[in-house]
Image (cartoon, rainbow, N blue to C red):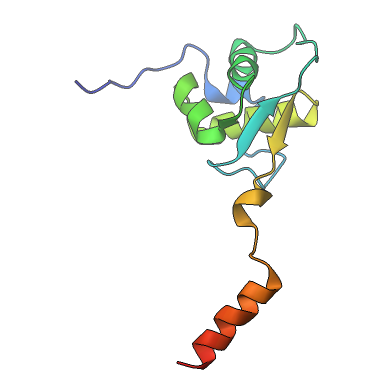
Length: 116
């Protein structure tokens, strides 16, 4: 069974105050998000923003959050950007996924390639 398109009663541009682009250009679908502990949730946040903060109590990728909210990634990116700007969400660094091996290992690999 396939899910049918489900329209939202509130238009996307209302949720983003008319903005189509996030204030941060580093947000990608795989960007990891975490809600900041101990921050009070302002009453001015929309229901989707509150739900986004609830979802991000653990680490969650932007694309996953969009899927849970049943909203386009581009729309959720704008909401995420706003919540990062106000200090309610943080972007978790995934530098550890791109750690290079020690220099001596790289030199051995390079030497091995040169000997081919």
